[in-house]
Length: 232
Image 1: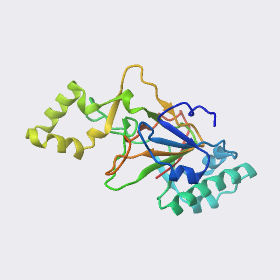
Image 2 (image 1 turned 90 degrees about the vertical axis):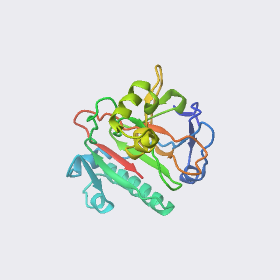
Image 3 (image 1 turned 180 degrees about the horizontal axis):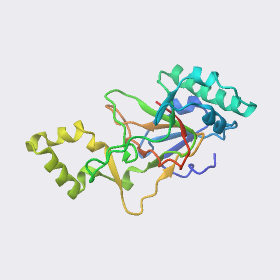
Image 4 (image 1 turned 135 degrees about the horizontal axis):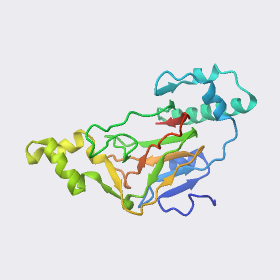
């Protein structure tokens, strides 16, 4: 299949949900894309949903209650189908209407919010699935194009000052507050935008993982536009 992701060694492109869940991460490949050109009016769905906060979880019954055009109904069925497929697989999909995520700017010298490049970690074998139906889409970046923030000397020194405890407890401190999950792009690094409509599976840091975890970040939202994101 020829598309914008085909020539990227980090990404494997598949054509079915079965391939998406059954393909195995290996080597530098830690992102799998079910490449799709979706039909349907997802913007109409966003316009008719009622946000309750900066992040509002949308349930199937909320979608089914909407009065929609033919294009909106087509979009709704795609979302519901994705949620069913992921639930049947054993995942717990969450559909979110996003204005923005909370920012973490308290420390100034390091950020641990989702707008920072980061990896997901789990104590059990799992993967991250996501699809942006409307609005700005997430970015991923190759592991050799980033540096772990806790290894950057000036950041590490400030974290040691913040810790202000025994040296042997420092690494545990970094994990406890998730500092070790965040990465800084190297000069000339090139991120890949995941685009709208594609269903992605990203490698997570967990015991038994055969590939490096996928480094990713949430996008800065477009002004005045909500994101509609399926994630689990």
